[in-house]
Image (tube, rainbow, N blue to C red; front, side):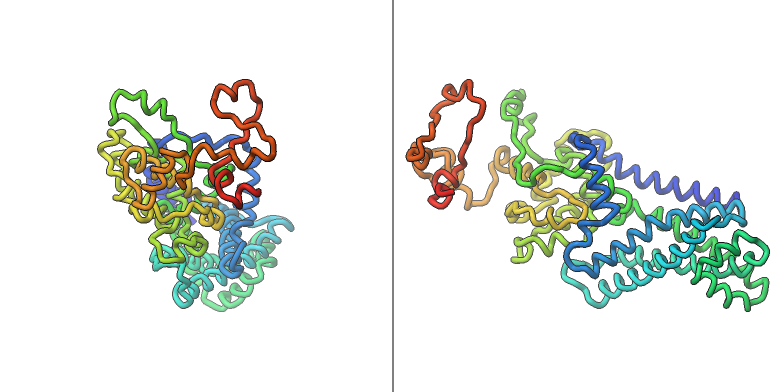
Length: 446
């Protein structure tokens, strides 16, 4: 082969990948901090179980789940094969040695055949079945075509390699004895003339590497960047209950010199955390969130997939503004420019989208903080909430019931009820009962 050629190809491909990936990653460094490296053992467990073992992926409809799991296993396991191909560029006699090498050659043929079947089903599903959660996506078709091309060119390369070299090289002959598909194809290729075998050997080697490195360069440009970011996103997952509303430091906000400097909730892209940016770049666009979301299923304009896609494109469009650290005013508000007002308030915060997401992307914290800004800074909220906010302001409960009756339900039980903060001093524990349990008859029984 050509050591110079393979070296140049790798340098160009890795440089292009690094440049394109850095353009996205550099955006994350401009977003808000968020501590996501505590409880490292639990995070590593999530990567193992839901990442490498695909535990969340295989839930639900088993056919697409199995399809994706096969493609993922194939991608991870065939990395060894690609390293072998690169080594062959420097030394054509490189072969998989010993029993372990032979077994890997057999496994390689099996998994490549399985990946071809999985990709075939993926194309059938997108082009024929067309489930509602999948939208027209040319990139997905391109990626599937590239994966199929990698599998086919690898089989063809083995065929011509074994036909050309297995008789003169014991190591390659040993590998051929285990690679049952490559060996069968080599038997057919051996009937061709020697010049054709040599040309086929060289053509399919370079064709496969060209496709592999093209695949690498394409990854950072679209949704399939999740191949790189999914495992980190799993490691940096929230790891706490989804329905915890972020608190607002009102004292800090009020301490600002002017209203323009007050930052409450999420207003522009710069107010997002780096993890929320990572989630936007990691979304696989599988559509499971749409199948799970009761709001989407009733015709509302909401899905975690759409929100992530909108945020992703907005971050890329505003990259120069973010990276050059221009002031907040240089960025347009996320609501309604990126996320529609109706979309923001359609969410019921049930968390089904997060439960359905195979890589545990987060949705609720971002929406909570977007709403906080709209309500507390812009004074913008649905008409239906006016009565609720008025009731909270006057009676401290959403129904406007008399505030002094909040603790009446506890009187028969002889529970001590505190009326002021002074009474709470010195207590180790204080049980605060919410409005639903205090005023609703069913909640009181519980």
